[in-house]
Image: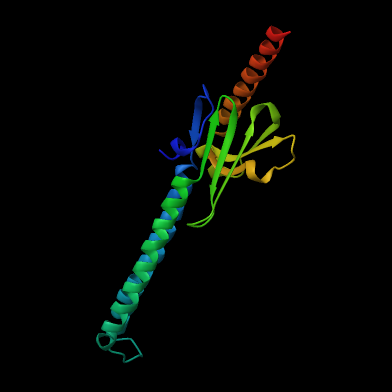
Length: 189
């Protein structure tokens, strides 16, 4: 998997790996497929309308068929590349929650990736936002982790599934980490 390439500390355990919600991928895919099919549907409807007896236009589309096939093939190629980009972006945008830190990988384009991480000891607050009726019914939303450094942007991710559960996992891991550290300090004293 992708997160295996990230160097984890000794005895660091991955608690949860999170991709964006499936509905985001589904809605983007439906949009691209609809855009890919639109020219073919328009060509067929136009052909049917021009063949009717009530059509005021006398255009024979058969003479333009080779042009349509060429440009439609280019349009399908562009649509296919867009779908590949959407699936790649979905697979590579990831949050990894371990028992010691949160790692955020945000893919921006095909050749840019932002990787940020922070230790759970620096966690000050974690906020979630679920906006809209679809997000409420499908249970996805925005998760924002605020740290002492004040760098909020790299630890904010949208369309994550089950944000309440993610918040609970992060807070539990942070509490466990703080408890472990306090017991280690007491043992050294």
